[in-house]
Length: 459
Ligand SMILES: *Cc1c(COP(=O)(O)O)cnc(C)c1O
Image (cartoon, rainbow, N blue to C red; front, side, top):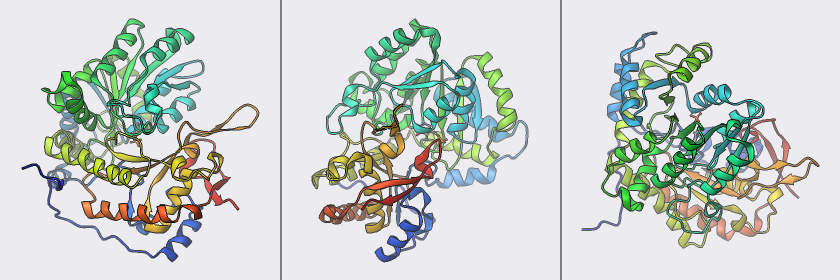
């Protein structure tokens, strides 16, 4: 029998209460949060789809591991367990533990970056770009053109444009390219997968030009699911084999364990180059912690080791990808424009299409995020001109390529009825479309402004 209902492949052992709020209360709460969903108190959120980062529910095995964590300063048993798990999954020899992905990014990109250096990616994630620009280097995004057309079908919309890669290397000179970073899946580009063939084509170009090639592997297991089911040459490989094959084509990887390692905190950098490794270790010890824990507790390392195993299980991955698709397809059926096909960890709504009467400089995505909260207590995040908009030399507003709102699905946290509730809230928002207002920024910091900026409705 081919079941239509995707059941969660787990039973619930511990529950966490959700505080219910009314629309009247939420109108006040979002105003007090300066209309920025990052500034809300999490308790005041009913369904929290802000991020899939660090929000996973851990398994009973992981919780058991937490108790077994070895908290020794140097050479903890939990470190060796994590190191072995990372080596098994990635195939890389040298492993640097960090408290989260961006710490690994800061270590590596600060070391190899700096003024005059260029980084090239399918799409730099926001912390990746920020770390690169903070070092003084330049970050260039070259997704395939299909990746920028929200409703266009392509099985691997996360792919990098290899022709653009060649011309970008030629333009800046290979000696000035600090690294090529392939983000798998492509988070900021819609959680879209990258094919094994593309990882290989990029690898060939990097090797020919002697350029360091890094995989941002936050969602490598989710990507492996898409590859197995969409890429003919991989249909008989296991998810783990697909991941391992991808890693074998690169020089190193950075992973935020808060995604596909199914934990709440952690990250690592893995590579084969011993001299880079040794240089980074010194900085690690100054800024994060000793080489056998980085910024992590022994129990964190224990949970990462177990999570890296669990995430590659078929029943889990099938449920994970199908349930994200379920939400996306429901919204599509209601006529809402979403990035298609649906990505792995999130559904991305085209806010420019949802609110055509709000101009991009008034942030339609921000408006949709605010309305979702007011109407349903749902927290989402704008991925558009608030996050990626900029100003040119004359100070004119330069919008982002797309105005999206991301509904990120925490791993193993919400059930189908929670998701059906989200769908219902969207039905309501469609009815109230004409009432939505644009927003203006009233305060912003220098870097990563979406986290802390303040807004006000226009008019
Ligand atoms: C989350 C994420 C990071 C940064 O990791 P943190 O653990 O949040 O610091 C880097 N790249 C991608 C693609 C991510 O999704």
